Length: 230
Ligand code: BJW
Image (cartoon, rainbow, N blue to C red):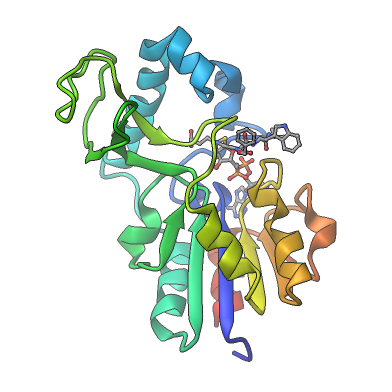
């Protein structure tokens, strides 16, 4: 590969072929849930039971044994292993399929489903079962302070400084399986373009920010990603 510093952004589309539903479009998670009811801090304040149920169900599915990394996750893990230059994988996904595939240079900018966070101290704890709205937090010994470690609308995504530093210095930016509807991730392509990087979109269809990419390959991630990294 002729590139030296790669940043890869992934979204729900990369996990679709592993059996995890995407958000938008037919059969997406937002078909059955209004995002205002489950993915905002206001929703959690209003009805923590509903929000915890939404994430508990997704956590159960992730740990059910039915879900495994697909060929696209495996291809990115292989790329990280073999690529001699700088590599950063930024995922909007809260599943752990990139880790299971073997990626280590990875940022979960929208959080992680298998972690809980204390709303008071910010301390993180692993969680592999139901999180109840009344759970007692080990760090502050209070009930009701533990929330899913996810980034809701209106909240600041994680590790943005590290991400923008990598984007401003990359020579290849690849966006995989994301609709380009949610910022700041949807704006990453513009940062990479400003840095002079080559930008590539791998998705089922043209995304909302598709025009900003120099190169496009459309199809299921299991095929486009494996072909791209080959
Ligand atoms: C395949 C495939 C296959 C299918 N192969 N492809 C106006 C303008 C600009 C910005 C804003 C605005 N108003 C508000 C904002 C900011 C807001 C925002 O972007 N809103 C938009 C709705 C406009 N953003 C925020 O609030 C963010 N924070 C922020 O901006 O902080 C700064 C700030 C803070 C405070 C005050 C002021 C500023 C936070 C966003 C948090 C997003 N959270 C969620 C939930 C996380 C937890 C969870 O998982 O439940 O993150 S929402 C949801 O969307 C989730 C995803 O990570 C995110 C992106 O979705 P994604 O991954 O793109 O999925 P889909 O379903 O949309 O698309 C899937 C794609 O895959 C499709 O294109 C398919 O075709 C494709 N596909 N199968 C390849 N097999």
